[in-house]
Image 1 (spheres, rainbow, N blue to C red):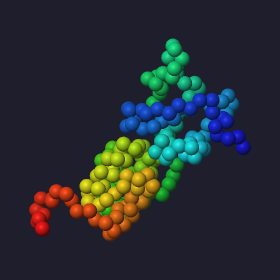
Image 2: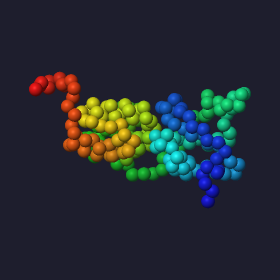
Image 3: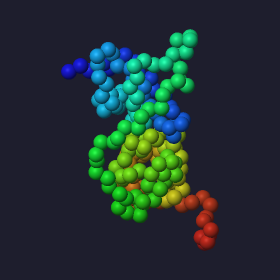
Image 4: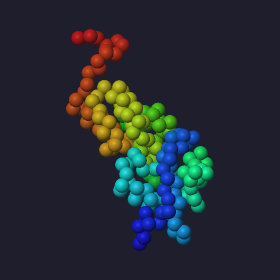
Length: 184
């Protein structure tokens, strides 16, 4: 079996702001070779951090070039939205998962369909948005919540479990008391 990278002629990663700032891979395969986006995603996941693996792939005959020979980013086409393979959709089961799904939607602009949707690969999140999510989680539950947790368990279900543990182990007292709270 031919390795995925041997089938590639060119691979270009670009953010498409019109596509809600998603990371898109523009692929040009070698003559006669077919490009399987799933195999390419798995290959990239072995070499790139999870948050850098593209959420969409567009196969092109060739990359558009400027007169000086550079890739013409403005001429890259909008990738077609492929139908997702069938999967089990698990809705939020607890109030914590429901609130986390709302926070995902607030930061990403898209609500996860399932508590198992990956913040990075399914929903198009990246490190800056993960930082925003971590801040919202800390503020919502007043817990010590490391940004690293989003990279380690990037799903609503995984983060809900992490938050539940953090709430039991080390609740953080807010620096400024909330309205209506008594000072001690």
